[in-house]
Length: 111
Image (cartoon, rainbow, N blue to C red; front, side, top):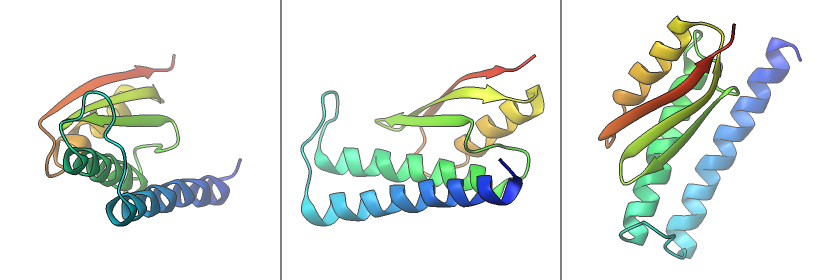
């Protein structure tokens, strides 16, 4: 997969996530287990989207290889990084997003 194709895939993922947020805020949604309210669910989705967007914008982080999950402002990063710099950059970018309370970095560095 060349760089342009990968970039287009990432942009599609981010666009899909943003569309999901819009749909959830306009159509309503069921609160999932562990969430306090629909508002908390939407806030967590917005945080996840913002973190992924920062990954897409940053040349050191491969947004396709790193997953982001958010629950009540606690972000969990998982997946694979090419090196330790990518892993630490991803964590630093996530910590800078508004609404993030904690970041657990479970990203593995490929040998």
